[in-house]
Structure formats: structure tokens, C-alpha cells
Length: 344
Image (cartoon, rainbow, N blue to C red; front, top):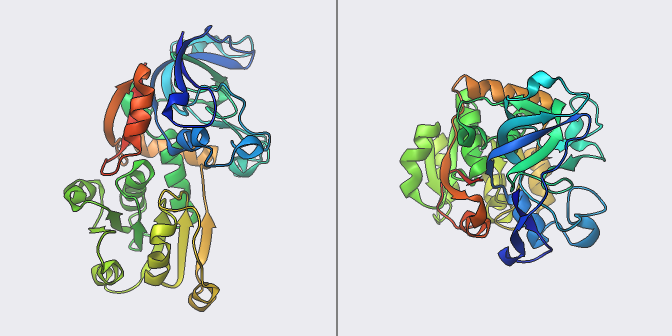
């Protein structure tokens, strides 16, 4: 089969197109013919060493073992099933739940042995992938590409909103609202949980598109009056912030939160370190949440909402698998709306 593997830490030249044997499923696994694989920050940060190099490079303490086939947002058709798997699964179109874990139900994502496809296991930048049968779910939509954009970004976004216990009528500010996680945060908060959404982007040319997704207000982080504009749009302080930006909007976020407000982060594309005046936290009774991925139950609830049309795929562009370098380079450019997807 054709695959793209990461050979080590560095720039996109560490991505190489190779020919490999089609993997053989273990007794509890299935072989999936990959039809689409969306790109996430996680595989780029892994390649760049943003999580650390050596023993801190992946999701496990021992680090990533190179070469590794990245890719975690995977859809495809089951072509072969292991001896312990119901053979009726062959021929099913599935979406992959992206990690294994021995954690108890509801705590799978915080178990010490959580291991991620595309980091600890070979992933979806390939024509075939093997994965445990119990972690393969029916696609929520009929199209492979449309169904491939939710696994990591969607589950992360869904988990963030559930962590905040968002209630109808509350105001939620979404940073990086045009990105993969952000555009789904807008939809989930507004269309599923009934919140009012203030979407923060760079380019206000994206305003109409974000309002179509459910945003009530769209503001630019480039504004010198951003804090004032947020407060004016809401008629006062806001309830919660869901953030993927990090340092660049952290102080603004704390400034516009109400007393008792909540801040949930799952990314740091705008800076991984920040300054914090603890007085802001305790005087405003602010709660901080760190968040990434989610539980199987949340994944199932998300798939149900997608199948009901409450959450729609937002896709910026597709690339053929062989152009993974170009796709990852494009992924890091500003001004996109939605996901980038590789097609074998």
C-alpha cells in the first residue's frame, strides 16, 4: 500500500511517501480501506516536536517511535476482520474512535495508558489501517470526506462544551472560530446546546460564514478595542470561553468573563506560555479547564447530533494523499475555514 510516514522531528521534509505491506489485523481488529483522513494540529505538533522531543514527543511517556504513519480522523470501509470479530462487520463504512485506553467509562481520555492513532499507532495517512473493531462506529453521514472531519476536532469541541456545562441562553466566546475545532465549537454551542456565540477570527470577511454556522456576533482579534467590542456585543460580561489560541487572547478572555465565569482551553496556536495574575482568578471566581479529546459516550452523542443534521462538516480543501507535505503547509496558513482532508 501507499503511505506517508514521519521519519523524525523537523519540517515537512520529514514526511515521506513510501510503499509498505498492507497491515494484518489482529484477532480483535479490522482492516480498513481508508477513504479520507482529515488533518489535525496534533500530528503537525508531533512532527515539529512541539510536545517535546525524545520521551515527551507523543501521548505516552516513552515518546513516538519513528518512522510513524500519522493521521487520526479516519473514515473507510472494513475489508477484513480478525478471528474474534463479527465477520458481518466486513463491508461497513466506519469512522474511527481515535485512541485506546484502559480507563473506566467516562475517564478513558485521562487514563495513563491512553494511546493515540497516528502517534502511538500507525494512522490514516495511508491506503489501509488496522484498528480495534470495538472502536469503529458507523459513519454519521453518507460521504466519507464529510464524515472524516469530526473524530478529533469534533470530540474535543464537544467535550469542551460539556465540561463547561453550557446552558441555553448563556454567552460563549469561541476563539479561533474559523479553524477545525473552533468552527465545531460554534456549531455545538449554538445548535446543540442553545448558547449565544461570539466568534473571534482574524478576517471579518469570514463573518457571514460563521453566522451561518450559528455565531451571533463575529469579531476580529486584530481590533484594538476587542474587549470593549465583546462586552458591547453581549451587553456585559460573558459566561464562558472555549479557547484554542492560548497566550494571544488569554488576558482578553479573563477580562471579559463574568464573576464565576469559566475558561476552557484545548490548544495554544497563538502561544504556549502566558502570564497570569492570580488575583484575576480568585477575585472573579474564574474556573480554568484543560481539555483534549473526550469519552466514548461523548463521541456517540456527537455522532448522533451529526446524523440529525445539528452539526455540519466544514471543509476548506482536500488534497491527494501524496501531497501531505503541501497539505500540512497549507494547514498552518491563516484565513481558512474548517478542515483540510487527505484523500488516498
